[in-house]
Image (cartoon, rainbow, N blue to C red):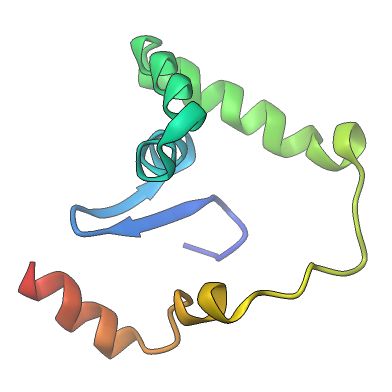
Amino acid sequence: MPIDDSYLLIDQDGVHTKSEGYFRLAKILGGWWRLGIVGRIVPRPVRDWLYDRVAANRYRWFGRVDQCALLTAEQRGRLIVDDAGLSESLAAS
């Protein structure tokens, strides 16, 4: 899958795309983000259709920036830089 085709969340249970990735992320983030999990009552095809509409229009609605914010040391430490290490980590769990 081309990297820009979908949002990806990789965890111990595998790779999750589109709305399912966002719901899993909301669960991981906890706090107020968990309220978004209520959206899971909507059937996945409908959620993913809505995801595609937002993705297709996000720059028009929210704008585009030329630069990303600098990551903190803790955030940089969470980036995946070694696919072999990821494979070993997922296989171990």
